[in-house]
Length: 102
Image (cartoon, rainbow, N blue to C red; front, side, top):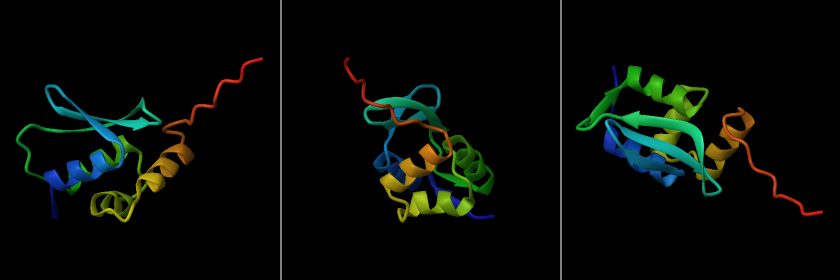
């Protein structure tokens, strides 16, 4: 079973728009256009590595369709714009329409 460094995962998601909300666990919320969305994932305090089981759980929390997308997120071929597009197309986040004044 493969293991992945938690620090690399955290650095990758923070570069892609996730913001840490450190509580009992380290929660990371995805922000789009400066607004907090319902997309989140978490890590445990002191966690140095995680396995395929936790990768699958985090992949589902974020809303990625495959292990390869998750690996691309961590290794960085998946850009911030790519992640945003995946989350919009899957319905996980919505782009707010500008309000038009009458």
